[in-house]
Image (cartoon, rainbow, N blue to C red; front, side, top):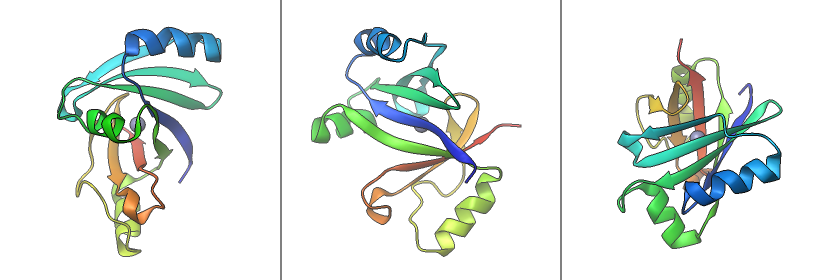
Length: 133
Ligand code: ZN
């Protein structure tokens, strides 16, 4: 894994959390993007090399709705940048990690992504991401 690419934070309302994080980080939100397939609306901030991704649910069936209902707002996932997502998925699967998707899927911010089930990662939802080339 190359580095922590971003931290994903589940929020109830981007309209409130974007200005909050702009104040906190003293850095503007540089991008918002809806990922319809995931049922999320996202907002990105740059903090040094890593990013913060705020996630708001766009539907009750969104994984973010379920997460907030269960745990409340807060850190939702850690995303690691990888050079070759398919190779990394194979490597981790062979070690017994459970992938939530069998093939890379389209994520926000021009990325191919794959999530690892938290039950095999000490309760932390892990995202692998690779810049689309
Ligand atoms: Zn993410």
